[in-house]
Length: 156
Image (cartoon, rainbow, N blue to C red; front, side, top):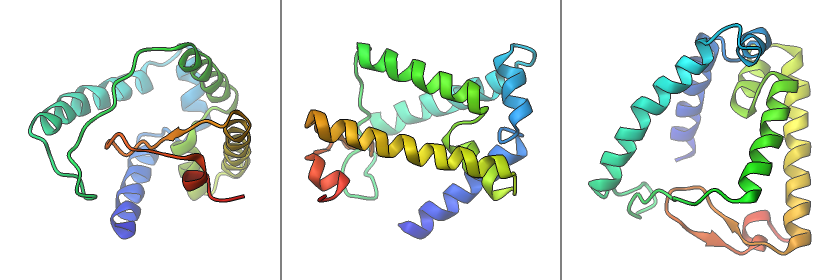
């Protein structure tokens, strides 16, 4: 499974780089509404993946882990809005988000290293916040599993 994940991750990184989504100037032109190229790519991705996921879920596709594909659906809550605003602010300041930041790093852009370090700092801050609030973390594997924090974050 790790090799399959690595291959698909590399292909995804190639697509990001080919679409110039790892380029700081491309993202900032989009966020300044000077170019709608990235919005078009996002719309295309949603337009292809949403019906495909709907079909696969309806046909009860078995996942590699043996479960049936069941996509999580949730109502918009306050923490979603706060998280989205924080993500958007970081995206606009850094000119990248997690996957393109890794593509930046792989392409040799030094700025990518700074963005990746920032990503790990953010992940550590999130872990500390979850640990303080004694929350349960929902896994995002499409199988609606939830694990206690100690199993997800590891014993500390």
